[in-house]
Image (cartoon, rainbow, N blue to C red; front, side):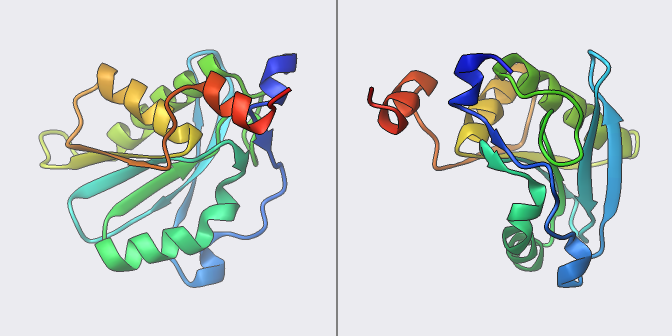
Length: 166
């Protein structure tokens, strides 16, 4: 990991639980990026025809979002796909900005592969914090039904300046 990446990314490798701990039905998903890394995520099925592709923030891993997954699944009834970027959780590699975009592309391919051809599936990009930047970038590349940004920031440089004023 490059020195500047150490100030932006705070991955955790160990999973602290799974959706099963909260009685959520889920499937482990393993998929490959365009540069050959193996990533890990969870697919949580719902009864509605919308899939939420969750792009999480810069710290922890998908297991740190379990309570949020439960709330979203119960209140919205959507399919949810959440995955760990390279270097987070059970995903291979080391985090980087370019890598995150590749990872999101691979996650989108995975979600698309689950859809039935000609189906009426809707897609929502949900980006939280650093994941909001990834969601916006993905929305410029792909047609999507909605983009939800939670706690976005205007630039990595400004965010780093607030966290590390020196």
